[in-house]
Image (cartoon, rainbow, N blue to C red; front, side, top):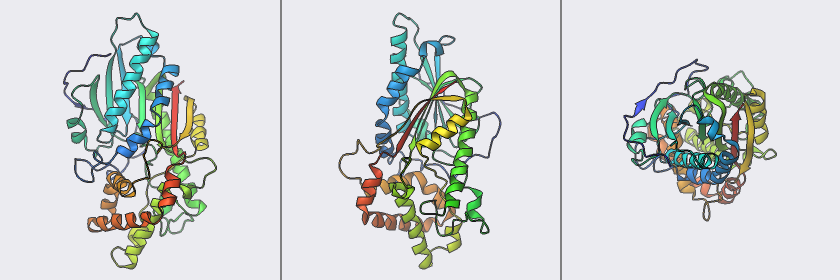
Length: 379
């Protein structure tokens, strides 16, 4: 076991390197603090989903990560958690990853007297509530900690400096809304909708194209930062290759969000232009799409790419009210920036009522194999 790190000064490091594209808008951050709708209080669904693949990540580290080689030049292992938010999920994930790496090191070097040290680099948007993150940092932890604000769609760390990258429920966020969606003269104009659920093919393709561009830039940035033989694990929503997107529970929610906004337009609470100019920058890829972008990039080998059931550890039916609050904790800042804050409570109340009317569809879409796990090794 690595020694428990003393209470170091918490360093905030600015991401350097080339700017590939402007960072995500400042509104794309989870609710900070510790209030009723905070991410701190409303992120246990994500943690349960991530726990589903905990054993698979342990297996990948045990079988594929050469810790002896990675630690041959220094006894410090550098780990980055991209899209860390405000905790507590990031702390649990980092604790697990470090434990698995320590176990692998013991297997490879049973006679070694060297004690591995760990530095965890917590990354998220500059507008993320890093104060809440660091004030809730576990006092007893086997790692040093630093914060790195910036978009993970560009360079964040020095060249060949990172041994392990973790990214959970963050990479489905696009770097920006596809520009075609706001062009009234384009076939991809997404009038009356806020996502590509049940949208024309031109809208779907605009989203898919943006995701492919973002992934290429993400992978190129990580390829510069991760050492040869280093590992990256990605957990995110996924779409079975043959499943229509409209069958996912999330797509049902986005569809009902749009219809709720349109109801409010008809009641004069918001304008139609407000709805037509708002789109969620979220994309759910299939395993085939993910494999294609990784193979095209060429800097990583795919060690694992599979779909799992994110709700397999959920007892009983999905709690729709809690699910909506979780979504609110993750997305509310976006809505507040675009719409009047006065209508947000009403929108989420109406959304909850609509989802209760379609409980069976929510259950079916949520409990299918709709979570993508990707494990990559830097070539």
